[in-house]
Amino acid sequence: MSDNLKSVFSKIAQCSGIALKEYIDKFCPGGISTLRFFSYGSNMNEEKFKEDTRQAGFEFGLVNVKKATLQGYKRILGNRSKRHGLAFTICLSENDMTEGICHDIPIAGLEAFLKKEGVLLDEPSYELLIVRVLEEETPVLTLKGLKPSNVDKLNREQMLQAYCYLCKTLEGAKRWNVNCSDIMSMKENLHEKLIKD
Image 1 (cartoon, one colour):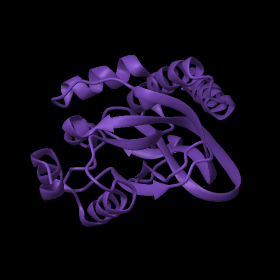
Image 2 (cartoon, helix red, strand yellow):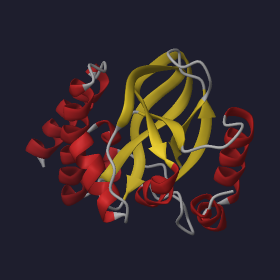
Image 3 (cartoon, helix red, strand yellow):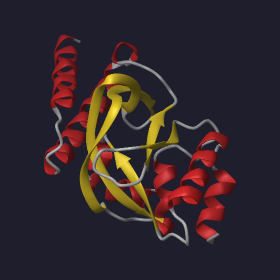
Image 4 (spheres, helix red, strand yellow):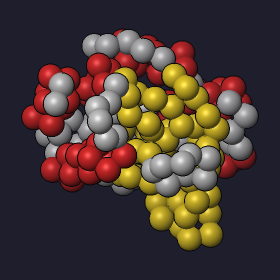
């Protein structure tokens, strides 16, 4: 096991650690240099992604990107975030699907990526899940929020942060031709709340 992975496993919470180990053992036989991730929120915005990974200690961009569809899950603006007020998560929803992108995370940048996502905190904001997307031959990793919240619990400053987050997410989704009608609707609803406030 590489030093990068050893460092991640020394900091990661139990559930995410189990998912990561299972993913590596089952889907990365014979050594790994990258892990495959499904992203459905602001990580689709490459400019923001690069800046966030830089601030987390190891800058890299979106590599080997492919538009992807996760069935049986719905994207919701429902995870509390210090930086964004509120951020996306996914929840099980049998008849729904979420479009996003699959991309590679280099092992050298995995710790920075998980750090920026709040996976390595003592009280993590997100946890790792293994999921199947239609466009990939093998399962991929994704993130699920652990701090449920909603727009009604936000103060004005947090609403503005969430609005900016939605704008950045929309830019990224459009770049990759991802269906973002749900994101657009959330942005419009939040805009109305800000105007009334």
